Image 1 (cartoon, rainbow, N blue to C red):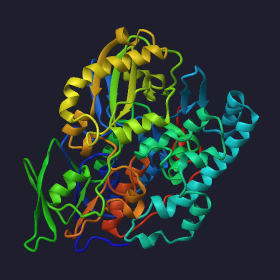
Image 2 (cartoon, rainbow, N blue to C red):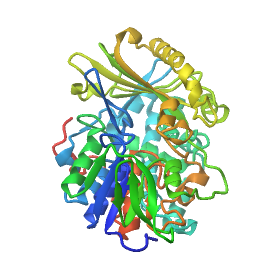
Image 3 (cartoon, helix red, strand yellow):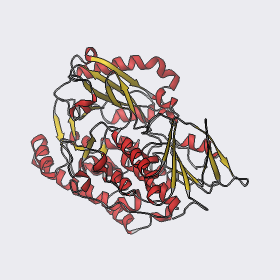
Image 4 (cartoon, rainbow, N blue to C red):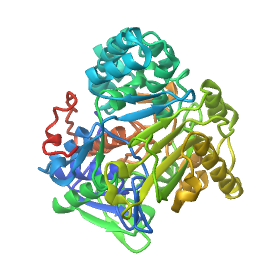
Length: 514
């Protein structure tokens, strides 16, 4: 594994998001002095917090899987996730609601899910689910060590026995087709393939290897931190500070100062300070990181970005009993909507929506008697869809259309029930300097996966490392946490493999509330 050259005693981490905080904790555990610089007044990055009208709103991801990866970061400084964050296991992990009026509670416990599938679609599909679950577990085991939790220096590093195992499992086929070998009911197939959108690729075109995300969602378990998702980065920041890190909030990095030869970063220059350093970890989105470095690596193919999203945060005076903590509301259309998103740059004509009701698990996130809802509608990014400028006029019309669609799907009276709201569109992501107006960064096409994804080392700078969803291993809370760990390993030269854990057996869950 290649590492940065020269001294690495003092590392400046740019950005206090999940990747930056994970890097900071692993660096601290390896004996480095760490300064974290964050432009916002609080930690979290994309996993931020908005306080409005007594509602505590998570501005970023709402689904937490694989929390043992966060626990690894805490363990680096001698702490435990469970001592700082109260994790609530979600049962069900999701509720899937379909256009025909049917619904399925998605459980991560195998017997409960077998019975749910049997009741929903019959014994043959239940048996198919059992086989699918075994396949997902094998897929995860084949990928974790050598394809996800690893620093690639060359595509040749793919040549391990796990590559043959992954090929034998059909990992290089198409995700939708492979899942179809186990289950035939189209509704069930959606439950185990919609996760491809996390990777920015339609299920019919995504590599079957990306079904590992379905493993994380439907096998390994889904959790919610009491106090909201922002409780995780806040706890990581607190642990880093307790371990000796200096955290500087409200400082925006303007440029990197270089040595006379230009091959080393010698200081990070903010709008108020000059911070000398021996190495730097950059976690902003790739265009920002490359701008600071003064160099964009050449690629044979232009980066393709994932679809974006419109998010309506709605504080309401009522809720709807058909909503679980997480509800996937599927439209009748399926394959055509992905073409709208990724090929034609159009808004979904029959959207599938993620509706999260965090107050189902933690009522304290809203004022007494009130409820908080997070409604995510995938939409085209600004490379192929409406521009950031266009969203200024489009946003209020799309909000009205979205609420009308929710009304049709049984959330009666939702518009009138809203007493506090925040609408986030690609224009907002663009203003936060996310490429193509998407918070999901580069899509996980084959040419942008593993060793072909933008690397966390950049030629021309000996002591800078990248972390975050744009680099390896990719998009999502688990992989972003790993990106910080991998970035730290580039500096320290140490690597701790993530040990797979059976669902429900991790020590992080001792004392967790349900």
